[in-house]
Amino acid sequence: MNRLIEKWSEKYKKSINCDNPKGFSQKAHCAGRKKNESLTIEEIIKIIDEEIEAFVNERCQKGYKTHPTRKTKKMFGRTYRNCVKAEEGKDPAKGTGKKPKGSGRRLYTDENPNDTVSVKFSSVSDIQDTFSKASFKNKSHKRQSQIINLVHQRVRAAYNNAKDPETKARLKKAFSYAKKRKEASKEKTKRMRKND
Image (cartoon, rainbow, N blue to C red; front, side, top):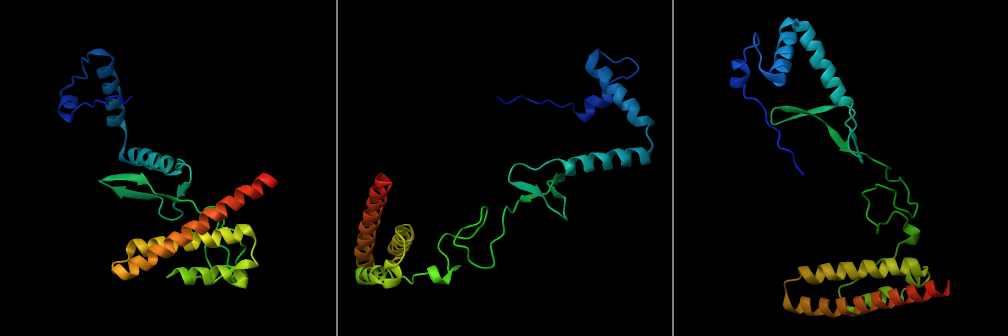
């Protein structure tokens, strides 16, 4: 439930008679006003600097960190802490076969050339050729499933983006074939899990 936050207007604040304040709120306001009037400019600057320092040192929300050089940013006339997404792990220079946690790298890359299978997906025969290659058949079932899924995603995107009726018809057949192979791969995975 959101609470309504009411603030006094500057006009109302100026109208308060601090020689004869009425109620707790006006007394608190007058005490603060007297304290501020007694401060020198250097003291006020010091207080503001301390508040900014405390603000900057506050923690960002989970998964973010304060920018190392630009700690604050100004938006709509106010100063905010400059939080940027935390990098949990940098992409490795050489392929490890695993995607680092927090990496922006996609699942299917050529980061390990020995594990790569070149794929074609523009027609049913292209997909059949890809899946009949020795480089595909030599892979584990898990890796084969990834490659089948990749072909399925790419042919689906190509089919959805195609404008020419002939190309769309050809890609529709290729998409149907890739979908069948994907379902067969899923069934094999289920069987293998049952046997384990």
